Length: 250
Image 1: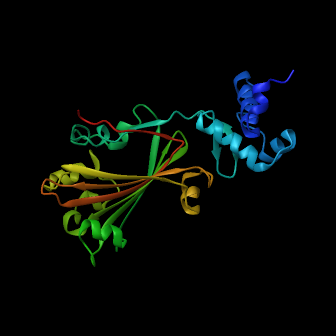
Image 2: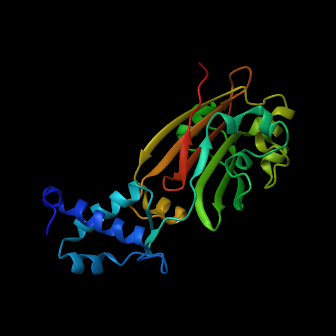
Image 3: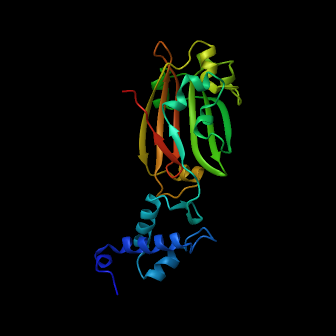
């Protein structure tokens, strides 16, 4: 007998209910992967957009995740808890620990680093107050447990960091902030601007996500004790990989 309440639900919610029940009963436990969109369209005799809406419901519940060019899988990656305040605390980088260590304690991770001197984009040059000048640029791709989770690019004024480890691939214990502290320009405060949007094609490729997976764009500016901008860092996070935490004093 058909559940009257089920008949009142939109078709995509009905399909999401069925897929959820299958996930909970272990139907996909061995493959860890849902059938293709085409197969689900044929099974449920519905349009592809309806299937995609059903998948979005399951993604919002953290039951599944979409992998670019591969399909939809049962979610197994534990979200990274990014505490925006705690991770930037001087007690961490001042003690020689990386900000990255705060994000992923006890979990595997690696990063790919590229360092070069460049003419920064106008938005960066304007923020740093170095229009018409070059900047040292550090680009990183971060991975954890075989998954790309974040891409970040930082710019620093040449007159501050020329000849320091910030202009090298390995910045040493405590990272760039510890090196800025050593030359008298350690971060005294930060400002982060956060946007949620769909990725550009290159961004989706870098993070290994689908074009309909939202990304978190964060632009952080670090200021020294004299309120001079000493770093601008633009970050792109896979929204399926992170929980963002902001802790404020009362």
